[in-house]
Image (cartoon, rainbow, N blue to C red; front, side, top):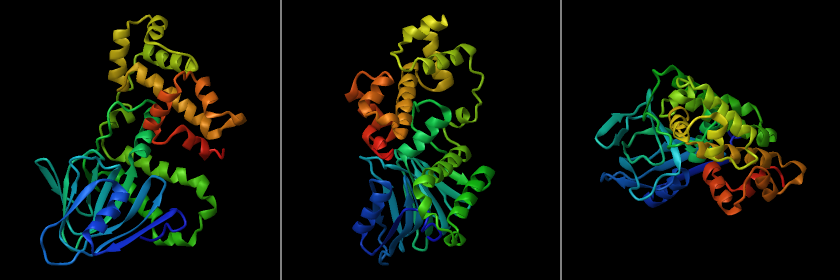
Length: 330
């Protein structure tokens, strides 16, 4: 893996002939899984040569012998993972379905997917992992509402998909060897989030998933009254907003409001209010204006239960309010 030595901020280089050590390396990159020797006498020649920026890891993965990669039945992985063979044709299996992956047909899996990947000795894979909070928070920002269900991608990533092919071209451009002539290190704090955002946003716009219709606006015929509901929430987010308040303001029954929120926005009014309030708090913590502390910022945006606030915040953004606050330099 070359080309991002100045852009990516953490090298990950592992080589081992020990199966347990190979498992431990992949556990750090993707989370819980199992790696099985299929019985050939050839020694393991595991190597991972990659780099990490924020919540994204990109690298080259080699096992050097026939193995089976299997997700854990008890625990989910922590990352969305993409594997694209440069050499070889691993077999992706999920339930009764399977397909051969190759350079033109990669595979993408979600942290909660249960699957197997049969990998032959000569296989060389381009490997990308993206943290679940990074991917889900980016999508929530794009569709301007919390996710009601996890993201499920179509598992097969074909180069025949022009947008997906363009995404691979973008990735290859960013990781190409001629980038070595540029030194981005002095700009890393400023540009790192942009590179994460560009790669994740373009992936979400390119590979089909269960939010694609919403992302592309095929449900754009939102009733006018729901647009007024969103505006009301935004303008009154500093205060306690109940479903009764929406009902009275809109002149529409709470049953219809809830039903249409689920149909058009894939969430409930209460979840959207919580999401938007937490998003406002996050934005203020990131700039940390006037030296306000976390408690004062949270209360300003209508939070009255700080313990529950911290739990909800970390669940949505993958970090605590204090972690966000520290990013602003306080």
